[in-house]
Image 1 (tube, rainbow, N blue to C red):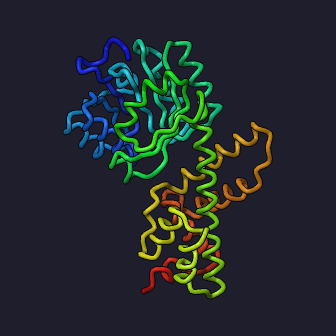
Image 2: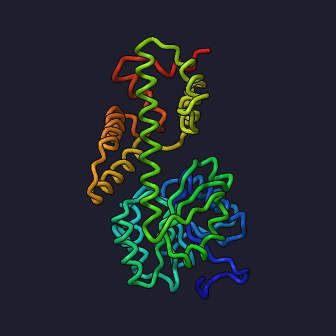
Image 3: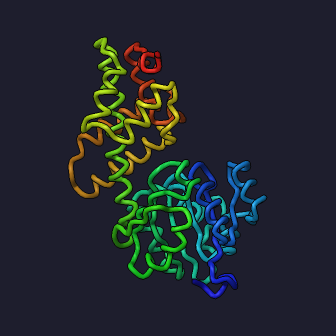
Length: 313
């Protein structure tokens, strides 16, 4: 850690991105005794709770970095990460970084962008680590997230105790860049399941099948998964918000995955089809809805009643 670490030996933490995931992560860091500075962007209510619990509010992204030994980013994607680190309408962190700064990017980002940002950081003596997340805001609040870290062995061992403040499972998945690549593969497979479930239940509804019996069958077979239980199990209760990940963000991540496969020079026919399903849902006005609302997309385009049938007692 830098020489500006606290007298307790705990590094000072900065946090940019107090959203659904970030609020729980930051609150756990604060509860574990880490001095915390936050940059408030949109979610004033969540940040205010942290400030009342002892976090300090900073006036800009750069000020947040300058008050920190480790700066966490938990924002939407590569565009936002590049603006924070490299600069945009406001000066970026690299315009005047503190000595010994480590940036840990927990966003889902494009590996090519991550490489550019990391190389720019290295020139300024800043360590940039990609460490995207898995699980949901519920586990973020509980300090039980999964995290996949792309870093050198030395950097991984250095930051692991900090990550333990909000993570249950910490995976060192490879060198710099491996974290974001691993996350895109993981998200593609997850979102493919969600798209397949929505389409399958639409076909069952159109064929006049008992959707509850289909769920019961799938629940005791190889198709069963946490995603199915969250999506279809939630729909059984009329709840399409158990998987708190928006369709717009899913579309973005699938776009990133498509760019990755293009760079790798490999065909990705399944990913293209899944991506187009989420594009269609966004075009129908469902972008800000959570991914279980892919069922709503099929209701609209097929003139079906799926969620109502599932929730019918």
